[in-house]
Amino acid sequence: MGFKVLGLDASGPMMTVGLVEDGQALALFSARMPRAAGSLLAPWIGEQVRYFGKPDGLVVGVGPGSFTGVRVAIATAKALAWAWNIPVKGVSSLACWAWSAPVGSRVIVTSERRGPAFYLGDYFRGKDGPKPLSPDRAISGALPPNFPLSVAVWVLGPAGRDPAVLQQIGPRAEPLEADLSGVNVALEGWFAVQWGRADDPLSLAPRYLREPAVSVRRAR
Image 1: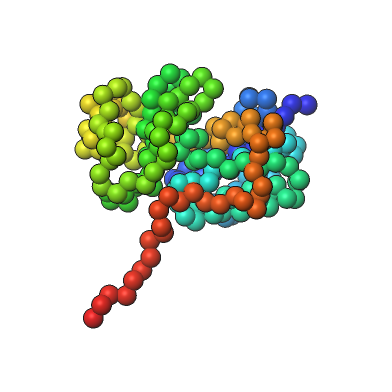
Image 2: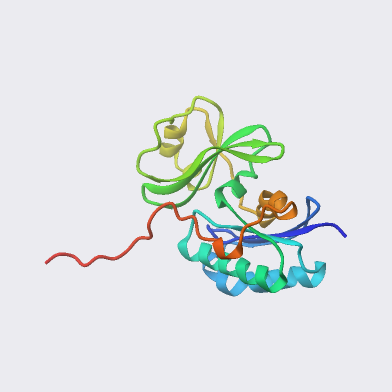
């Protein structure tokens, strides 16, 4: 029997659960139903376990992304890690999405856009997975000082569909259409859960990068 790792993420528009054994995908359930994470994640996981058995480790995307989706995914991973007594690792949801880029390329990952605000990750997609070139960050209007980029770069997420933002990222920025996959979530944390670098389940927390929006009473 190989080492099986289950990955789950509900941080963005794509809710996803994937199962990997020794680096090979066994199962993948995904849907553009982020608001249904509370009702679908557990049944999807149960279906995969019924066919392939209990995983040896868990990996969960901790954001940045949807406040509700991230919390639901983390709570699910914590509960299963305790119930099954298996290691769990929290990973960047943007890094997991960067696995979709071609090997040897630079990729900008964007998510959860609300007007001029969105999350941004900057990665190089190596043969062993994406490597961060700068920390994931919350953008509000202006891009960081190191933009625009002069090199060729793929752009994932909502910024890739906006010509104005593409131009700000760089003259050689090109959109890349690909979805975040639970299989890639599992691969992002594979080494950590297999070789003793997992997280304490109690320490798992959402990586929001910015404060949730709140309502304030208008002054009279």
